[in-house]
Image (cartoon, rainbow, N blue to C red; front, side):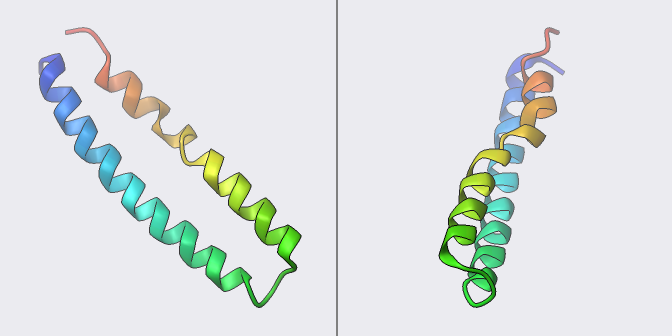
Length: 67
């Protein structure tokens, strides 16, 4: 598989992952509004806003691997 094909597949995989992650993170965040104080919600959104990138490292490595 050439690099261009891997990048197209990876792009669609990235967009699908991001959409699912955003829906799940927002759902959990909205469920927290009645359960935890505001500072804990802020901490949750700060962490959730950063950790989404870590599972994508293997995808990016695969996309940029040489032929």
